[in-house]
Image 1 (cartoon, rainbow, N blue to C red):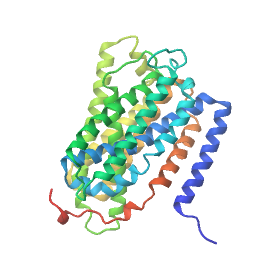
Image 2 (cartoon, helix red, strand yellow; image 1 turned 90 degrees about the horizontal axis):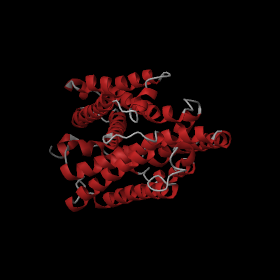
Image 3 (cartoon, rainbow, N blue to C red; image 1 turned 45 degrees about the vertical axis):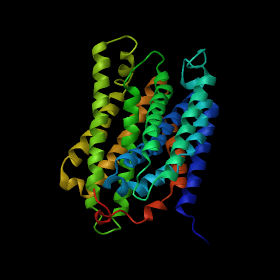
Length: 349
């Protein structure tokens, strides 16, 4: 009897988790929609962030992009799933966003759904066009790369405003879109390095090339940390009745400990690990830093979504995370990770 493959196991787990979330939605639609939104935001950030990295490397070049190229390609293969898994978010929009049902302009449900579809379509178009235009050295035509990067940044910022900010109807933050986008790029970089470092264990002499992408990862950790702190300082100093409740909800009922955990896992641990060059070239240290970033980013996604709806953390959240993640694993697979990895002798810096 043939043993099931990893992809088949992932597909079976995904179907089972989706079925359980659907059963929950029958009885507690709001809780299921909340759980699905949080899981969607985490997993969507991986292909979106990977697309940012591919476009940036296409314009600037460098060793780091070639080192991570197989892992980034694997994540980009999951980009079409963003359209499929967006459907439950749109179906549950009335239960998630208090202003959608009553709004007549920007937050009206038809316009809200149309914008979401446009975002996802544009991301897929950019990804497909980029994969077709990329050169063997990872370069992209400047006439394509920089306009695509501008469109990608504009749409991800708007998506962050649309999908997260309306959870708190009167809350605003001009830096919020940039902060969420930075978090997506950080998580994609961490995931790509995690996959690359795992594959590097099977290839002798592949630890030194980890230094170049590790430096990029360190810069992204600092950028995400800076934006998060700046938003907190601005909101707290302004002390506006329309803004401060957003943080008050995230510093009560145990969420303050989640925030502390996020700061440790997504900033302190990777910063202290990657700031030292010998550790940046250590496969074990890179695996530790990237793993903590991804766990911290998942906690951050739950911290951003759950306190506003009032449903709290329940078993639906991990189920939705597994449902979407299993599908991403099935589509992304590990085929590209077995491709020859870049070595420093193949190209210059």
